[in-house]
Image (cartoon, rainbow, N blue to C red; front, side, top):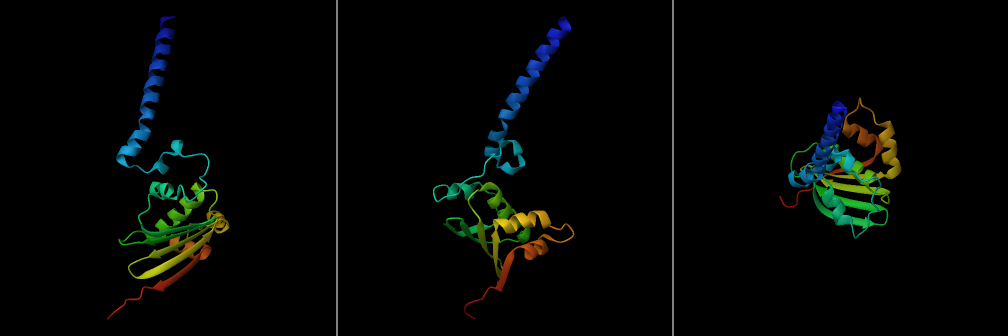
Length: 164
């Protein structure tokens, strides 16, 4: 009988310690800037309905490497003008931005990304149906850039320098 009591006390103590430890995860994320996507337990179950009242909050919560220049929201159409000042894995970042927008929102059905790099301007247009097709038809033998160019509408133009 004593073994049973000790085992029960041990189980209760272990449960209390586990609950206390897990309660610190949101505090650590907030204080040390961990990416919330890495802690799947705390992701919202439903996607956000993006509107003008919560657009800024939504964008601040994302962990994008691009510098935002302009944001337009017109109904189900979201346009982001961004600048890639430093050398980043450009197409991997584009893939992440599109994925986060469609995964975390309900009402956005069309996204246009305008990305100014050091050499060119990229315009990527993606609909929700294109993104779903991309998720199912993405080929591992191709690079992220090749996959994006095959599945999304991508326009690239060189940046013009003004003044000689």
